Length: 549
Picture 1: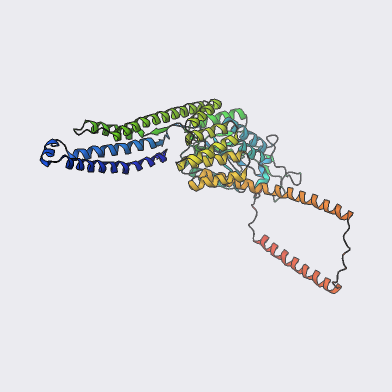
Picture 2: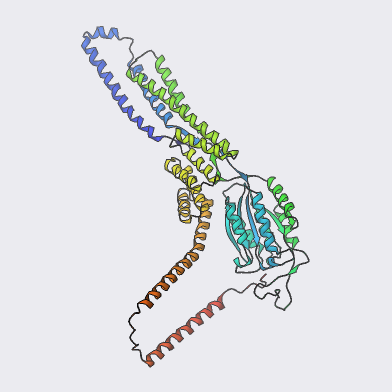
């Protein structure tokens, strides 16, 4: 978006009324001088070559040139979106099967553990990609939207278990639908889904859903984990193998055909889980052949397109025209304008030097030389303390160096000085990412909310906000537990004090035996009424799936 970097210089335009007043003063002075000379005929003959129209034109040229110089100093710029430091990578959504059938031990120690190990290794091999996670069984749940926070992604994958989804079964179509909804349709980056499952699907809509993803340009690569011969499923509750309604031992078999069909429909590849190194190598090659995406939250503006010279060139041309016109008037005003012209050149040279320093810093950033990039950005800030681009890029550099406090301070400086809402919104978003990595959820949530206030359509900020709120909600029970422990300790202290200083004996209850029996009966009636209501709710709830593995 086009914007002026230094709007404060527009106050110089207040000098234009002063110039106009000077013009009127000169005109009156000329008239008074003519009257003082005396003979009108003689004066007319002396100034016969004088053109009042040309004089007004010359004055107008000076005023316009002065205004153009002010606009040049204010610095009209446009962030060069074609010159951003970006990390190439895909938006990859990992879809992990956590149904009971993944506990089968035909792959040691079991299918789920090996799937989690494979997903974690793949994340390490894709440092430039954004990773998301969906787990599914009888239902699908978005555990984490696509993010550059790979540590969090690995944490969620390692914590995944069959207990995370209460509704058991295997419904691949629901997981694929969730993947389609999780991607931002306005984001033009390349999107891919990695489905890791034994393919034992209890819903036949998976292929139709895969076609929907293919129409949206989303590739689904599949990994079959298990064996075609199958294996019994250990029951964690009984310690025995799971049995069906007829009492037969359930044998979970790998359904390769469905996983192959899903991959072929979306122009992806299917691989049987054998050698993890080979699988990861094939996936990297497949993703490398596809279009790369740019991660907005990690972008840095290499430079700003400067448009000051348009105004400066126009002002220079007008001054040349004013000087070569037949009516010439040299004085304080012209001298002042020429001084302002020289100062403008000095200011522009300084701005160019700052932008060159930022460009050098961004080159170091692209080469991952973060120490040199930090020095360049700090040098640029010293030259121009209110340069929001330098402080924004410095924040990104400090984030890469794991200096989260320094990064947050740089983003705050960007927010304070930014004249462009887009840069300010990006600073709030990146500030939220830094707080989230530091596990400061309250500040993180506030930063994401501020980012959404500036751009309500930022889906990344919205999803990260939901994730932070969910994590805060998960931490609340632990906080409550700590509070209970503190209360328990306090109660123990109070009891010890009471033993040392026993209170007065309580008075005997004045409640008669008959009243006590009536109260007990009323409590029993209420308990029966409550149990009846709970029984009705259970009766009206949805039936369990036919297969729970």
